Amino acid sequence: MIYREKMICSILLLFKLTSCVSGVSVVDVTQSSYQAGENHDVTLEWTFQTRTDGSIKSIFIFCQMYTGVRSFILFSLYKGVETLAAQDKRFAGRVKFDKDALREGHLRLKMSRLRTDDSGHYRCDVFTGEGGGSMTCHLNVTAERDRRKPETPNTTSGGRGPSQTGSPSQPESPGWIVLYCGLGLGTLLGVCWGFYHLYRKQRFTLFL
Image 1 (cartoon, helix red, strand yellow):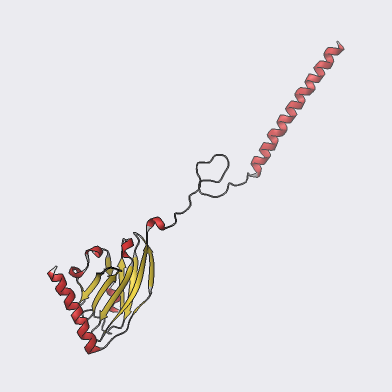
Image 2 (image 1 turned 180 degrees about the horizontal axis):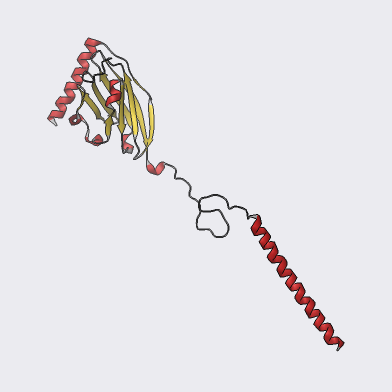
């Protein structure tokens, strides 16, 4: 804990001194607001002016997450090396940065397994050796139960209702229609033939 507090104080002091001596560089955010679901991932991004040699050893970064109650250390970079000792335990193992993008002036922090209490304001202070600056964005994480569940088709109803995939039942093919008509016509002819023979038999009996 003592080492962590010393690291934080050193980084903050470095930003104070360099911003006064070297001036302020341009730091911006690609989005001012982010929206994501619980247990999902999100990538927060800041842009800043960097040197043309592509070295990150002269880059110092200090990022914090602010709520209405207190602040938490999200990410810090000291002489091009991530200082995990200064990171708050709630973000341990959930924050990754893109080192290649950092050389091009893009700070991309990917947060995984989001929680609802990750909602808040995120501020990053960046110093490149030529100046320093900071910018803030907001993240809102929606609870899983608040997200609308997709509708599922009714698979328990009988008859020729909608299929299990939710698509309407297809009309009968012409072959089945011809078969039904043939069976109906055959049945009708059979009944008529039976009545005809019964009628002839009754007439023959009366004649005798």
